[in-house]
Length: 341
Image 1 (cartoon, rainbow, N blue to C red):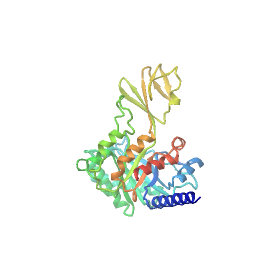
Image 2 (tube, rainbow, N blue to C red):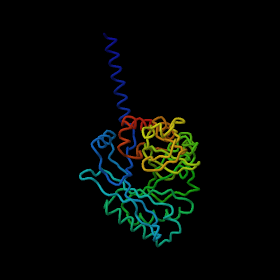
Image 3 (cartoon, rainbow, N blue to C red):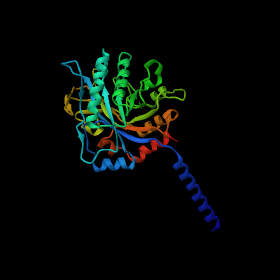
């Protein structure tokens, strides 16, 4: 009896120590990107967010692109609004800016665009704590984008400005430049060659991530991390990528009179047909890509050396009903444990 009591006491003490260690360990804030035109979370989605302690949403408000007729930058795909009483506690507005918008951009046009952008942002959120500018800038658009950041900061002096950082920009800051922002969001996805049929998974590939992430890589800005949860189908015709179907599943390709499974996640179109309103030719090939938990954890392990678990945000891209049904909250928390082990 004394042995049993002693063992029970030991187990109790060990559990207390583990709980104490967990309580003192930092973890990043879990957030999600929302890339749809309205915010109307159902009960299941809200319960999903609550179980992860998520109160922070990166919300795409609009894109900025060139109008084909006038050649002027215009807002595209504007966010329609929030459902009544469903506004997230912490909304980070996101604006995506195309590269062609920034080419041959004079300083006057740059300042005017900053004024128009911030005016539109304020019509949704009068005083956002943070604004994120999303642009995969190139050598030819870098100067214009960096000036735009500075001009936006002048318009929103009380707002922190974050920018998205691609893997190549992270690894080669001396070559690609460091934007004059307050924070960066490292986008750890879309790392493979989606145009190439031979690519295994262009969304996430731990072996490719390893080429960009390492102990010897440091970035001049504080970094948050974005990891993928989406899936799509890539359609190839005569060796060229011709279509991407977001959220395409195996079930949609289960009709064996139209689609022939030729390898894991790969299909051959057997006859002319339609798929989600898109016309497929006989002979078109389709590759399904999704994000497996094993790959997420491998990449999270690679991110440890560059992640400040006490001050960073881990944002999953993106939030929709399929993601809520496919991934369990405890699985996503396991990724956090790997990141901040």
